[in-house]
Image 1 (tube, rainbow, N blue to C red):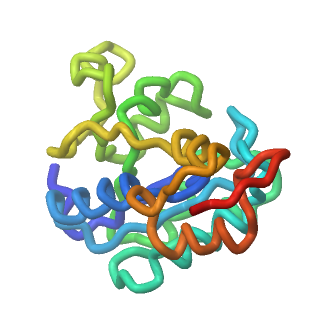
Image 2 (spheres, rainbow, N blue to C red):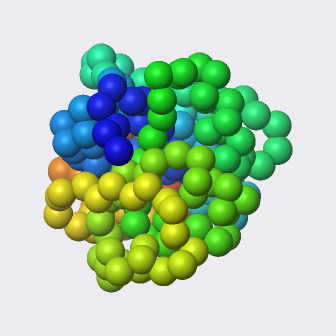
Length: 205
């Protein structure tokens, strides 16, 4: 099934957004001929508490600032403005009305491997094609099991994604530089607001 001219939905806490997120999005655009990619920062994730004490508006603003000069990327407030937990299947159903030309969902292999922890996993797998970013220790064979029967899974041809937001936050707490791995706009916002520094404030270089 071709994904040409579909809109890619890229959800996540983006706490903070980093260069690997953008690399995944760029590869998805180029390899599958998508019309655009909509980043969807989560509002209240149902499975975990957002680390670092950073509220949803701050996470949204960091993504918005970083993507402001890329015409084929945009950021949605759909989950930020939603009351209560944000579930992917609800977002997809709402987005169908906004983008009738067709959708696909961009996700890391590690997250998709845990599909059974998501709301209505079977319905979700049938509802939309997935573009999957490779992650360490998650092989393609994982997605040949019966629970993924009928799912449309398209693998990105790129190196495994090893960079994580938790690793970036750890470097900030330790006072180490992050410029190599994080967009300049996000670095500046983190510095301005003193984010992720923990109880003992330390300068972000």
